Amino acid sequence: METHEKLKQWQDEEAAIRPVLSAPGVATREQLRERSGLEFLNDIFQGKLPVAPIGALMDFIPVRADAGVMIFQGTPGPQHYNPIGMVHGGYAATLLDSCVGCAIHTMLPAGKGYSTLELKVNYIRALTDKTGPIRAEGRVISVGSQVAVAEGRITDVNGKLYAHATTTCLVFPI
Image 1 (cartoon, rainbow, N blue to C red):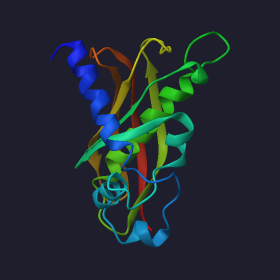
Image 2: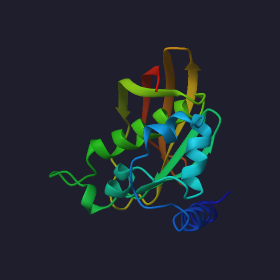
Image 3: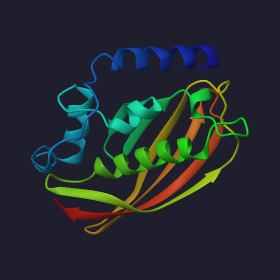
């Protein structure tokens, strides 16, 4: 697929998802407990549960959740800059933490939750307000009864890699 076609596809997908998402908020323990991770995320996509406040703050949204996979999309801008004229590394780290954690969540049964124990990020190149939309894609490596591991990548519409990460998460009953 050519770059302009992929850019259009990404923009169209975001435009279709944004109006369906509900206002930012935090789910209750009961809402978490009664759904599998994938059901929970699908309810966010259907506007039945709130999107995470961090996504609203940093202007990124979920665009896809499947078993073992989670994708977020955002467009870095000057509001994400550090004092030296590029997007702060925390923006990429936040996107990566979100996609890898949610990828793990897609694999958890009802009554199970997770928390990040470790996040390792490697930055490949700087993000700027000229980068355009980016996607953070998380994929599960392993999910056990107490520990889960996933990896994530941030790419642009050309497939150029900006950062990648691995995470280890604690899995526990909620």
